[in-house]
Structures are given as structure tokens and as C-alpha cells.
Image (tube, one colour):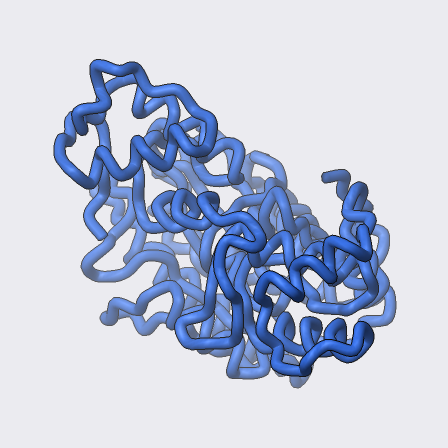
Length: 362
């Protein structure tokens, strides 16, 4: 989709404004003719912050998808397994209710996939309903009648945290998905001659080579010279048997914190203990090679949401910062960063990962 931003006019802007109003956000009446003005931008930014998206005030694919998903409440529509999958806040609420009742649907990602279908069928079996995996009004009423306790940390998170403690994977022999952010038609941040897509392609290839040198199997999600949709990257990671997924990016522009490398994991509504532990492990190793610290944060973007394994997006440098731009131009940058990320992965999979995993409040 084309980006929708300040200064734009038309029906697409009116559609965005209607969804913002439905979400309880304010847009001044003089903009409601389809003018993307200052209050529309402020409403978009507020929506993005609430949903764990970068608050840039621009409606791109992730923001648009979440605007659509926010409009659904459980019971608004009949849910069932299909392709493409149903997505929305109604699906997320269904998943939360099922998890609270002990029917394990795993990650509460708002995507109605096979695991959610299995959870629905198990619930239907327990209440003596038809085993069709379809969530209509009868199934919704049955769920609500059980009054599941959905306050507090999700049981899915508790189960995942326990899985971290039981995890016995070693780097040798493990499959690791490596994603180079952006692509030829979407080069990402460009500053002072640095093009994000080209830099991260080099880092991702160096990381894949380093992982293979250590005995892992690297799954490259984007060839250097090709555009690959995010959904296709996530799908390949999911079908490849990857134990972890690492997406490599640079930072820049008004949202970037100058002088900071950031690691992102999961979403504000579906925090991932495994993703958090992996992010903290990678961050610690990047700091050891002298990269500045921007911290570890949740982020609701597709590559983190749609992958089923622990996934982290690493933003390695803010190239609009002259000092960091010089660091990126250093011919040893890709190799040093790749070795540090590989160390972080190995540390997460090794015996020292457990202390890094902590409870996350919702």
C-alpha cells in the first residue's frame, strides 16, 4: 500500500479518520473532509503508541493492518480456519479466553491459525458442542459463560517462560533464520551515502556465515538482490524449522535515538519471555563491542508478530548520527557485529540464558 501521511487528502484519509474515531481518538472536525492534518497525525501517533508501533504519524502497512484489526470485537463475525487467516482484536480476545481456560493456543497474536483452531475444538469437545473449530455466537456465549479470568499475565506467557527453562537447544545443528531488512525497492534509511538495505544485507550475510562456521544452519530470508514481502519472510522462517529469527536493521530519522542500538521483541499485548531473553542476550554482546545502548523494547511489527519462534529485530546504528555513520563505514563493522550477534544467540541457547528471562508486566 502507499503511505498515508500529513498533507494527503481523499477517501483513504477519511477511512483512516473513521477508524481513529472508532478507536476513541480525536480528529478536529475541519479535517474530517479527508484532510490529513495535524490532529489526524496526532491521533495516528497516539494509536501507534497504544499498539506498540513506531509513532511516526504515518499510516503504513503495519499501522493500517492494526487500524483494521482494532475494529473487531469478539462475536462481530464468525471465525474459522481459512487462508488468508482471520486477524483482529476479536481473535486475540478469543485466544486470551481459551488460554485462560487452559486450552493452549500459544501466542496471543490475533491470527486465527491451526493452533487456535485446535484450541477451539478442544473447548468444544469439553462443553459437548459440535467439533467444527468454528467460532460463532454459540461458541462465544459458551466461552463467556465460563467467565475466564483474563486479568494479569497471560497463561501463554507463563508456559513460554517455563519452556525457556526446559529449552535444551545448542547452537550446533540449530536452524537460525536471518533477515536482512528492507530490499531493493524499499532501501530504508538513507543518510550521507549510507543505504540501510545494502548495509544490513552485508551484516546479515556475515551473520549467516558466522553461524554456519559455528555449526548452525542459517536460513536467509531475503537474498540481497530481491524484494521479499514480510509475510513471505515470516512464512519461510515458520516452515523451515528455525529455532530463532534475527532481523537486522539500521535506525535513522526522527524516531531514532541518536547514539543508541536497540533490540526489539514481540508486542505490548503478547510479550515473549523467549524473545525478551534473546534480545537481552544480543544487546549485552553488542554493548561489549562498543555500540551505544538504546535498550530492549517490545514492538508490534509483522516480522516479530508472525514468526512462531523467538524473534528479535536489531537496529545496529543510527546513521543520521555522524559518529555512528563513521562506525558503519568501518570495513570491519559487519564482521564485528555479526560475531557479537552470534555470541548473543549462543549465549541465549547456552547455560547462561536463564537469568536473562524475567517476568513482564502487562
